[in-house]
Figure (cartoon, rainbow, N blue to C red):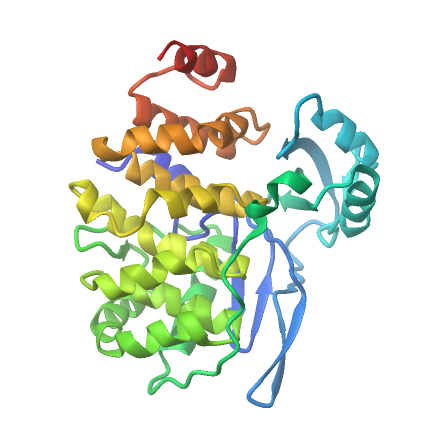
Length: 371
């Protein structure tokens, strides 16, 4: 039976907070009702066509102003308090925020004032008019948290239009969601995403039929193509090549891709494979890689990693390692003012330990100290 946690996550809309509308050549990003879209604003030349990757998408159905309801912080050192960073950034609960707010000036101010190696502010705007903000900091002695794969520089040609079709598929998912419909995606017994929405089903049937025969090209795109939107589509398509160890390996590497949206798509593609794993040797991704994703200074990456850990935690052999590596971040997530973040952390903790301690982080810390 499908759990309530699965329904809350609404996989068909977004994973790890990265929901983006795909217009081929231009990937326009926006915050969804379940997560955050971090905008990188990188302009790139792709085969003579200029694209502005992840440019904001205006949507007349969305509000022009939102109310800030909560701020949480990750990466703080001993003695540091989130309230101090919130004040230093000039943020007050209840203040109005616009969808285009990026906080870059505040992030730079915090970085210079406190000597952090990195500061990131990730806003989330929900459809009910609420805004949430996560402040991520990386101290100079923790720079290894910033290490990602090198940026690919190649241009890979594909002998089909599968990448474009995947972009249309992703667009349609969001159109359905914005219209108030249910995409109805769930992990299937074959290790791929199954859909209930009739308009989406023909796409997934085609992807299952065609992705295996284009495996080598898709892996090349994912690992070597300089355009993030093409890598992202390749990651999604490789998720429908569920019988291939080579595809799984490529997706595991892509969890540390330099682009946020590629990482999110790779994580999303791996979830149904993990859902069908019966033993640790069946798991298509290593716990260590997922924990590195969890430790990246990004709300979307944490959510994506926690979703993978929720599946890995079903395998008893992997639970001690998850407990050892992921516990500090999971406990911070448990204290988040955002219900969806706290609920995901609680689910992982419950699966790893078998305990039902709710969302009181002090109870979890006390219990784990006793172990």
